[in-house]
Each structure stands twice: as structure tokens, then as C-alpha cells.
Length: 280
Length: 177
Image 1 (cartoon, one colour):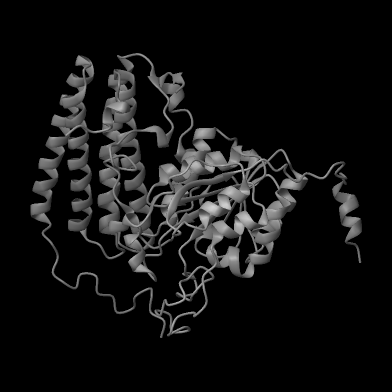
Image 2 (cartoon, chains in turn green, red; image 1 turned 90 degrees about the vertical axis):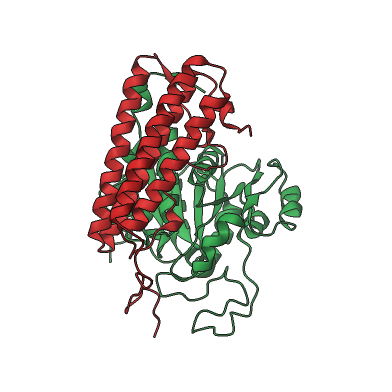
């Protein structure tokens, strides 16, 4: 632990990374805690707000860029990773954080997720997973259990096995894979710091309850548990361990050694040259 | 029963860092809860949370004042604090116990839980530490938290448990007809 004077400790606070826009999530929503975790992580790293970009897609959780004071882009449904990849490749000096939910990330954005993992651009993706489409009134999402019967669209349950985000991230080549729980925002903050500092594409799967459409998820607090193993740099070892995981193990599964994707000799064009390319 | 608290508060500086974080996280949470209640048109409870946040900030300022007389205090990452079983400051209200129709009684219950946990935290430090200055400060803080517990209990007498059906909503957010 570094020793600083009281004034220095107070110099950068999580509040500095919050905007004046107040969240409209339902009271009790896990996403509040993820926002707290993000701002605590950013304050801990002391990142300059003008050099930090927060990118998202569409959904409840994707509202997060508006709630931070960093530069943000509230993008198109499922396309947050495409937009963020372009941003990071064009501006490698920026710290790029991407946020979204399970529907945005694994359904309409599923293909982008696969390729973001294998491309391994140096950015951090936080998926706030509540296993439901909350913004559109509670339909089953790609991570919903096969027998969840509470949606009128799937009265007998979706009937298909849910996607396992951590396994998928490992299989597709993400370089850092971890899982947190919104009920422990300080640990989520630690995972975000680790993810940002680790080179390459970092995936942080955060279990974040939807208290409106999945009120039973309030019980996740007693379901989650430590993953119980030290992080490995071997994706095969991580995958073998994750196959035995029940989906509620928390911690870092992989801190790999893959070299981040960074094309050499990126062409730099002026705004005028770019505009000419779009001229009709 | 011994706790893991002392692994975090091994000296006055670390103890005061914990005391400061305890109040800061509580204030931050109350502010978030107030914002959330305002967004969901529950102005009375929003106002109450805002006041509770103000008290936490006032206590944080008092801790800072005490800290100035003890020299430098360490900078501790949020996840390095030792709260013995709690993931956050023992005074940070639990998000999952909130509801958009909650009333003053429920808000005060949340505050009471926080103050009781804060009192227990300081009492545990006072009982376990071998540092006489940490023990003295922890006893003082525990006593102050006990005072807060008593105050909130008197407030709760003014706001008894609402009747069953307080959360009835003819147009609930999860309606899908």
C-alpha cells in the first residue's frame, strides 16, 4: 500500500467519474453496483477522463456511458464491440471500456463477441448478465435457463440451453476472462482494474440481478462463491476448470499471454481525405 | 470470536483509512439511493436518503479531521479493505433491499442495519487490537455509532412498519399484458 497524505487520497474520487445524469434503473438493480465498481476502478487507476472511452450497445446496462464523465458512445444494438474495436485501433492511446448486457452481447452481438475474442484488441468488455431482456419487458435472453417459464413469449421456457459466457470467451481466444457479482462492487472494481491492465481483450462477466423481471435473482448473494483456483495463463487449463464451474464461481479464470491485435503502419488520413472517400 | 478485521486495521493510519472509507461508501450509496428514488417519483424517501448521506459525509469530515492529527494515512484500494464478511463498508446500505415504493420505515431500517454493523465493526477492532491508540479511537467511534443506532430507533417509532400492501402497484413495471 502506498502512503499519501489525506489530501492526496481525496484527490481522485469515484464521484469524479460520474456524470450529472442520474441512472433510471429500477431500485435494487445490480447495474447500480456495476456503475459504482467502474467509477471506483477508474478512480483507483487515476485514468484521465478525456483519455478514457466508455462504449456500449443497447439495453438497460448499456445506458452506462451516460452515467460516467468519460467520453462515451451509446451505440447500436449488439455493435458495441465493433465500434469499440475501431476506436481502439484508431486511437490506441485511449483506454477503452465496453459495456453491455447478455442480450446485447450474446444474441444480436454474439458474432461480434466471437470475433472480438479472437481478434484480441486491447480493451475491456464488461457484460452485465441478468439472464433476461429487461428493457423490453422480460423476454428470455441467450443466458436464460431452458426451463424459465415467466415470460409470456416462452410460457414453457426457452427450451434451449443457455450460452456460457465464460466458456465461450475462453474458446474464442479472449486473453483475460473473469467473473464478478454486482453484490460485491469492490471485487468487480478489482476485476476491472486487472482487466484494463492486462494486455489484449479482457472479458469480465458480471452477474447483475434484474429485480423486476427476475426477482429470484436477489438470492444470488447466497449462490455465488469464490472460483477457488489461482488464475492461469493457459487457456486449456482454464477451460478444463471452467467446465466444472456451476456458473456462479467468482474470480479470474485466465490471464493469458496472447499478443494483442495491433495492425502495423496504420494509415492516418485527414478528415478531408476521409470525407472524400464518402463523397457521392 | 476473532474476526479478520485486524488484518486491515493494524495501525492508526490503516484504521483511520477504514473509518474514512466506511463513511464515504455509506454516503455514496445513500446518494445513489436518493437519486434512484427521485427517478422513480418517491420524493419523501429520496429526501430521507439525501439527509442520511449528509450525515455520513459529516462523519467522514470528522474522521478526516482526526486523521490530520495523526499524520499520513495510507491509500487503500477499495477491495483491500477488511470488513470481516462484508464486501463493502458495513454502513453501505444493501441495494437488493430497496424497492421503488419503499417508505421511510424501510429506509430507516436500512440505515439501522448499517449503524448496527458499523458499531459492531468498531467494537470488534477495539476488542482485538493491541495498539492502544487504535483501541481508544475504535471505542470512541463504536460509542458514536451506538448513539446513531439509538437515534434511528427513535425515528423508527415515528415511522412504523407500513400495512401489508404498501408495495401494491396497479401499473407495475413488469406488467406485460
